[in-house]
Each structure stands twice: as C-alpha cells, then as structure tokens.
Length: 569
Image (tube, rainbow, N blue to C red; front, side):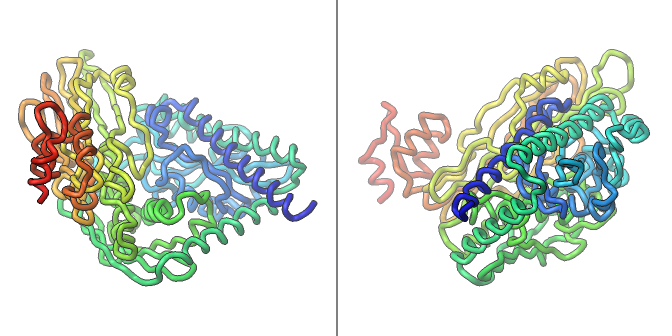
C-alpha cells in the first residue's frame, strides 16, 4: 500500500471514529431521563487509546465536559490499571477534581475489547438531575455538603451493574428515577461506542488502534504547531472583573506564545470563595483551552495532541484552582468566563483579532417548589425541581455582529418552554429578545432576552439564582459599547439578588432580563442600512439609532440620509 493511499485510509478511519462517538453521544441523549441531557445536550462522549489519550470527541456536548473528561480518563487509569479491566466492566465518578468540576456531573469510563484484547476506552459525562445535599444552592461551605461524592469505583463488573451503588445513589437524590435512568444511559452510551468500534475494526482489518492512534496524534500535533508558528511570540496580560457571589472576582490572565506552545497563567486572580462558585483546575483548563482553540485553530479536530499545545496554569487556592474540599457546585459561573479573559490577551497580541466580551456563563433558570423548599407537605402543592438553560448575547466578532441568546462557550441548547411547562407547575408568560441590550458598535453585540415565569398553582416557588454580568456587564472592544447588564426582579417590582436561593411569592412572577454582548468598533461607523435593519427587526430602538449610532430614521421607516450626515459630521 503506497504512502498516499495509506494517509487517505487513515483519514477515512479518523472520520469514522468521530462519527461513532457522535452516535455514542446521541445514544446518551436519546435514552437519558433528565431534560438537561435529553433536550439541552449537557453531555460529552469520546474515545481514548489504552494510554488514556483522547482520540476523538463527539461534536455534541459541552467544552467543560469534553476537555475535562479528556483529563479524567488518566485519573481512572491510575486507580484501575488496564491489566485488571475485563469485558463488561464500567467505572464511574463524580469527583470534581478528577471528573468535570462538580458533583452534578457523572463520568463513566468503559474498556472496549476486540477479539479479547483491550483496544480503547470510551468515556462519557452527563449532568444529572439531582445528586442530593444542598445541590444547586451555592450556600454550602464545602463540597461534602453539596451532594453525594462518588470516588472512582466500579459501576459494572462483567456486565452486572453494582446494585449497592445504585441503591446508595437512589437514596441520596430527590429525583431517584431520573438519576438511575441517567446512569443506565451513560452505560448504554459507552456500549454503543464500543459496539461501533468493533464493527469498524473488523471492516478495516484492524487488530489494534495503535497505528491509527499514532497517526491522529502526530498529525494533530504537527497541525497545531503550524498554527502556533504563525502567531506572534511574546507575553500579554489582561484582567477582567465579574460580580462574584459576595464580592467582585478579578481574573488576571497572562498569555505567553512561543514557537510551539500557547500558555495562559492565572496568577493574580482572586482567591477561593467561601461560597460554591469555585472552579477546580480541570474545569478551568477545559474552558480556557477551548476558548483559545476557537480563536486560533477552530477547524482542527479536538484531541489530546491539540490540547497538549495549550497549557493552562493557576496558583493553588485561587478561584480558578480551588482545592478539595472547596464548594464547587457553581463552577460554571467561573469557568465559562475564562475564554473572554483569553480573548482580551489575544486582542493585545493581535488587535482586531478577538471578539468583544459576551454574557459567557449560562443564565440557567433553576427553580423548585414543594416540601423542604417552599412549604410543608400538604398534598396541595406539587414538589418539583426544574432547570432550564437560557442565554444572553455573545460579544461582537470582528467580521460579524454577536449572536443573540446564544450559549457561548457552553454550547448547551436552550430547553424549550413547552418542556419546562410539561415537567413542572410553571408557566412561561414571556420569552423575547431584549431590545437595545446588545452593545453598540461597528459590529453590534448579540441581544439578551427577557423571560417572565409564574406558577400554575397558588403557591410560591424558589429560584436558585446563579447569574453574573449584573454589576459588571460584558465589555465592548475597540470603541464598542458595553452590553446591557442583567437584571432580576419580581413582577410586583421588588428587585432580586443575582445570587442565592430566593422565593417568588404565590401570585407573583419572576422577570429575568439577560445581558447583551459587548459591541466592537465605533458605533458611528456602522452602515446606516444595518442600523435601519436592526430598528425594523426590533433589535435597536429609534432613539438608540439616533443617539448612539447617529442614524436618523424617518417616519416612513427609511434612513434620513441628510440628517444622518449632519449628525455624523
């Protein structure tokens, strides 16, 4: 077989691996019980070589899960040597420091065999409905109060699930049926990947994945080094402030690029919080490396070789490298902000290259009601726990406006309001884009959205608020304006805090106004026709068009060119 044909064959098999892990992830979403998995895709799936190196990941999934899962398999191998693994085995953990950052995420690793020999490992992660303890509340003072902590341990042995573990997790969850169903879905997910891999290896006559693994990692490493070689060498430091829980949090990121490596260090970042907003280093690495890869190598496949060229460090006991037993349930609020820190560094290194800041962390509406949350058990009030992923706006990009109501960097899908209303006694009275929330600029920031939620019952419900960009909105770049700050209040007019568990009284409604993304460039340089289109679409008010963009819209809904020229002179 000539060398050129062999390269083509390797590429075909590589694409096949990506396809089969995508089917792996889709299996998880198809059979999972929890809406955050089934509807939002808060999952990850991937295939690893026997050494624990990520070879291919599913497109479906979140960077926080995928990239931290890429590190977690090595932890499994240190606890459970490959030589002891048997067909039908599966292993599990939700250790935030060896998994994906908090107790709600279960990671399952399954050895895959072909002709009796271990050839690969499949791993997957899902955000489960409830893991006990204080769960969604960020008021816990350590991780042990946040829920059931499962160390790395066998979930299945020779095809038999561990009944004692399943009994334990059921007795530590408010949603035992959903939790059990999601665990079985994780097992099925990896089994699907292993089954498809066996068929692929038979089809291509492969005894092992060794040569294919070497090709994938060597090719990826070479491609990533070529990308880095085109970047300027040097060191740049950027800082960014967010609201935090009880006090503002300052991120400080120092980017260093040499000929072969991109490094980002978080020395100078705020210390660990006593509240559950801390991020383990694995989660910090996951989102920081994802943001950098999006910017410099968006078309390269994600695997161990790519991630090895991006090195993320942080001093211990900073909020981005919280050590056990720090509370970490809200680590997404920290981790999902970190791509914006990296983008600010790259804007210094390569002006005009990076987007403006966006909402970043999801505005996830986590609500609950019933005994133990808002009242006593009297049979008249439905007990529920609901989570609905929602998003503000993305920052403007140098080549286009920011996307509205888009969950970057998490990538989770918004859960349809019909699903929320079907599973909980809630009514979503309003869900619409928030006019004038996108930061003005040559490129406009993406819009946030407004949601109004009430109860179908004559009963209160709780909102587990975990929102940011309220006191410190997403910043514009290059003369662009900041995006609008987020807001939270009752329909009766009472402002609510952006953090902590709060009660929406019976008969009242919750109103959430999500932030918009920052703008990029001088608003007065924006094409007047684009401003008019924004006004007609309801994205920008006529007043903002005149006062901010310096574009006058006439009564016949066309640009008054003469008045606009005078205003812009």
